[in-house]
Image 1 (tube, rainbow, N blue to C red):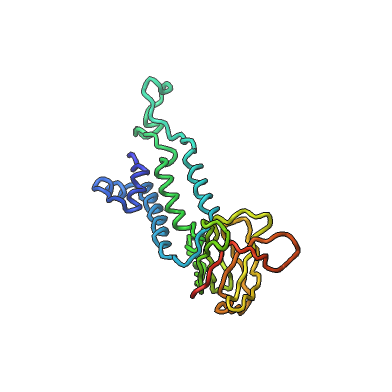
Image 2 (cartoon, rainbow, N blue to C red):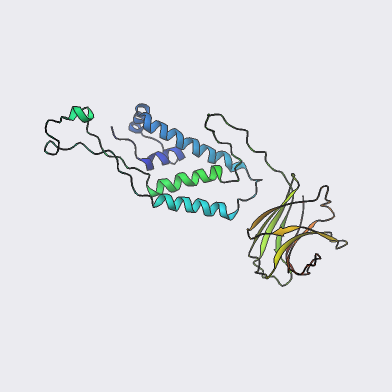
Length: 261
């Protein structure tokens, strides 16, 4: 009995189309296709459940690059050989009968992997379910469901815009989480000979203190001092600094934004 096409199972699992009478009958009688369908539906369900997690930070760029790499690697996998079809009487060794090899049933070869579209669709659904920083619980080897990771609450946020002579396409976002950390997402910062430093500034007094240094990634999580007064130190500033052993602000701000609750 031939199995349902993998591409067709993906469409059915995603709810893009409904199974016809013949497909429903096949799924009722074929344990292999039914198990594959249930697995795809489970992954699609995880992806749907993850759509409401809007308060989570955007996943770093390297996460999406890794997903793209996995998809491309899957697309280039060679097809695996399936079981051989029954040979004709002229090809069988002398004395061999069909019942001795396959019970008299003709074995049709199956594809050893999904088509490119199916691989891409299933991987994208899985990415939606688990690529958003691991907050969706998945089944472990024992079949039990571990507790989901606690969701972080955003206490304040600020869009970061180019400041001073910085090219206008430089931008970013700052978010303060209830776990006492500042999440920075930046893009298109100009190249500097030194490094980028993050500051919180009181706009009334212009007092400031350094929160930390940005690395090469576009996203960074930096711990804030305990009991920091965000109503006073409400301006987030990213500056260009040089290796001059001077801990003061360089005066070269690249992007700035004001935190609001």
